[in-house]
Image (cartoon, rainbow over all chains, first blue to last red; front, side):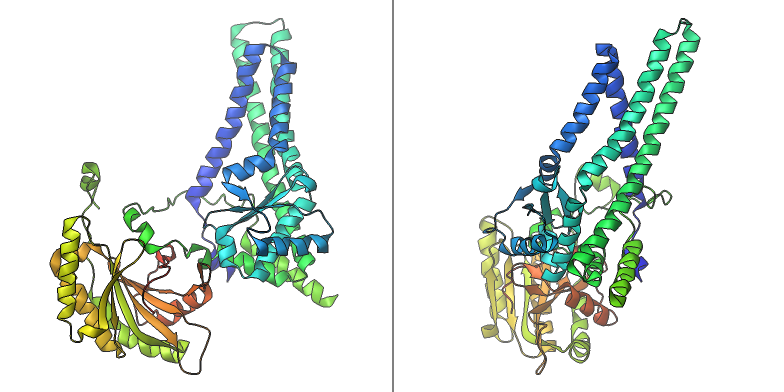
Length: 300
Length: 192
């Protein structure tokens, strides 16, 4: 039943894989460049760690900026605030800032370095499509991310892999330059080996980070569902935002008429890597877990 | 649009498909029995008239054309805030409403406005005794030749469940638009 709703976008999977690889390579290139510029391993490490830390510290601002979301007051969005007020009292946690992204894609996210500095953001499309009860379920899921400190954990997880790759690379430079054997041929071989090893470490750690992210999503589903006490409501919200309903636009026909020439056809090719390369578990998995939870709650 | 047109940066104007709209009276039976919805007797055509002096002239012509309708008192021209022109027809009999809408379409198409035709809309109301579904519309896309339901609710929301239910019920009677991303809204349309 659920499988019908999900269409695997192979093109997207391929693009994600390439983007991930490019990101990894970019980090590698920047670090290598820095090393040759400064000639100091310690400085490269400091800059790398500082960059990761900045990403973590300013996570909320970065996420809000990239989603073009703005923080809203209780006067702007009384309903959204009322739902979050209730949930925060239920969960006994400080109320995060509330933001809204003006996009028609139904989605929500939580960000911020700590529960106190957290921001929960819902898109306009989500608020338009979900009834209040289901909106509450989605916000409970996002609050669980905040309570679980998922931003901190995912930053640490991804930076550990990054640092592991960096350190392996740096240590090999150390070997290269401290060694007496400065034979050109050997140097090239060692350099090549260093690149391959650090690249492999990057890729493996990146895949592990994605696996961790999927696990955290399932945990947030679970805690969110337990918080509102109705796993089936979260399940129906998930189906609604991933299924047919998410495709029905709320834009006006007359406003897009002039854009009619630019209909996109999604690229379709490649193999199914989606399961491995996704930050979120499949809808089937999430629904199965929620159904299981519903049974458990029924027994209790 | 062919590669050659793309290279030259031209788009060919798409001519509308006017005839599928005659499938509506058959679909109305399904609508009443399966969804408890009946036509309100109001329908409209939405199109974008050109700009400039030709626009005023076209409007005058349209008014003249409307005056030739079977019953000129129940047909009128209005424009909306997005700059589109609507021809709104009131007729309690669906077959005759569809015929008159089609008549207006054909005349517009004959006057070269075919490529500017956007959509036709039929208003639906709850059948006597039923409640909860209205306001609801069936939108007909001229260029695709397909229908889709539109159930606007307060605050620019849509009743998506109802819309998907209507698609499921009407699929056999009407060519329904398969691409859900084309089910675009028509907020504040002047048809009831």
